[in-house]
Structure formats: structure tokens, C-alpha cells
Amino acid sequence: YMSLTYILKKDFTGAKRVLSGVDEKTNPGVVQALKGFIDALEGRHRDAVISYTSAIANKYERWDIYYNLCLSYLYLGEKLNAIDALSKISFAELPLKMYKAIGEIYYRFGNMTSAIVFLDAAIKKSRHKSSLYLMLGDLMYKKKEFDAALLSFKTVLNVENPNSINSL
Image (cartoon, rainbow, N blue to C red; front, side, top):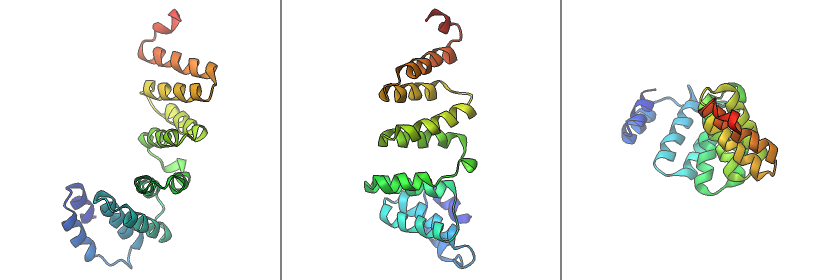
């Protein structure tokens, strides 16, 4: 994982040097995932897609690989492929901050149902809920579910100032 250290320092030449010395037969999925990460950071999103897809084909199926694959597809303007990559993310292994991020991507795509699923999951796991309820209220409003939208907006007020809800 020395290459990851180089990546975090944005020393892509050092990361590539380390990767070139790694036996890809030992752990091909990890090597391909790291190559994809470097490609994406250098703006070569088509190459990143190829690397991430190779990592997945080599049984390295992690939520972050699918998420990064989605982002590379977004940069390429391939919305359907991006949504397909997102749909393969397992809830079980997803860190909290990613629920909101994925909800936001679905929201931008106009897939309100999936956005709501991810935002609801984030709300259930988070202590800092006001921004999540605000986004959820906006989604409900756009779906013309006005009662649910109003409830979400009232909840934002309650989270921010527990005494304010009584004045509505």
C-alpha cells in the first residue's frame, strides 16, 4: 500500500513506480483499483473505467470502487453507466458519509426514489440531520408530496432549535 501513500501525496510518478514493481498476479484487483484511482486523479477517466472494471472482474468488489467508477462515468457524461455502478453498492459496507453523497448523485439524476432511500438511511444513522432533512424536504416537494415535505422542513427547524417547532 506504499502506492496509496504516494497517491495521497499526489506523487503519481512515485505511485506508478511502486505499482510497476508489484506482482499483479498476487492481488490483481487491488493493483487495478489503484491504477484506476491514479487515472481518475490525472483526468483519464476512460482509463479509470477500464481499471475499475478490471478490479471488479478480479473479485475486488468494494463500495469505493463502484463509487469511483460512478464518478468516472459522470465525468465522461455516461449517466446510465454511472447509475448502474451506484446500484451495485452494498448498503452493508457503506460508511455514513457516503449515504448522503450517493443520495445527492441520485437527486442530480432526477431519480428521487433512490435519493430518498439513501437519504432516509443517512438520517437513521446520523446525529447531524438538518441538512439531510432539508434535502429530503426538497425531494418530497419536487415529488409533489407536500405533507411529507412540510414535515421534513418542520423537522429541520426542530433539529436546529427544538423550541421553534411549537410556534408552527
